[in-house]
Length: 187
Image (cartoon, rainbow, N blue to C red; front, side, top):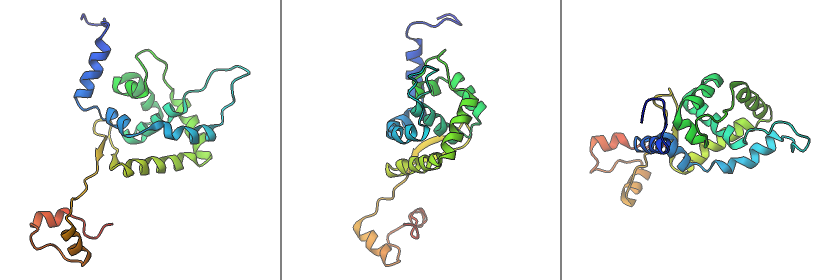
């Protein structure tokens, strides 16, 4: 391949390489069924049926995914628009290809405002967090370079260990490191 020219399968190869490198958005897409959020989004947004014409609205689930990435990576509306245009991993997550139109910063702001005014944005954020937790995951947000979805650690305790801990004691055969690793006060 010459510089600046794409071959027929170059995009597929790039996606495979991203997946092989551990693309966290592939993991997020595998863990979360975003379609579960569609009914509440569409009720809250209540767009017209477009029978009188006009430009069709962006897909509600695509926009919700954008808000998830915005929170996960700490992006402004402008930075979100740029990252969707720039990053092939973001485009793949949204089902877009290079050159497809992307939601602009003003649109993101308008949708968020509409969802916030109706109280839907906060409800969906809490529901999304619960959804992840129920599946044993936590969202670790941060900089664009290190945000990730990781599986939450679950200690494996035997029945005997659980009975001892219910009495407020620590099993005698536990090492000091094991004792520090287990949260004996948490539920």
